[in-house]
Amino acid sequence: MAHQDILERAAQRARAAGKKHAGDLTPEEAHQLLREHPKAKLVDVRSHPELDFAGFIEGCCHVPWQLYPGMTANPHFDEEIRRVAQPDEFLLLLCRTGGRSLAAAEHLAEQGYQHCFNILGGMEGKPDASGQRGKVEGWKASGLPWKHK
Image 1 (cartoon, rainbow, N blue to C red):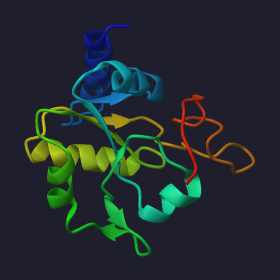
Image 2: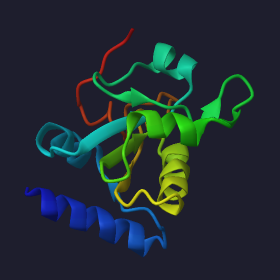
Image 3: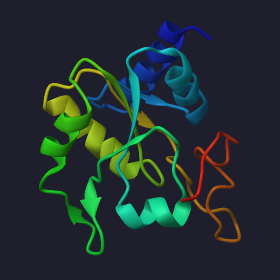
């Protein structure tokens, strides 16, 4: 699938949901863009303990949207994102289930970042019938590469 097709499909998903960010990507689409698009950059917005507990994707930038333990807004998010990403880059945002990355993508779109994409289902997605994450949706359920520290 060509980059343009992926980006258009992602944009259609976001527009259909009434969102401002550039688009919503499936994990597989995000993985393809990361491998092939020269301006694609993965930004993991989970808290530091989540990287230790649930694993991470090699080569990502880490800028927490919320801070552990209280999961309060990161007051330095804008400053930290400017250190790792430029407004013309294609930022693929990931969190645990897709909620915080969506909020971060919407926020960055308001700050002038034109190419912010949310990764649907995040790293682990919603839990299955037995309460386990990473089995139903998200990066892990898609069988894409990730690591534990």
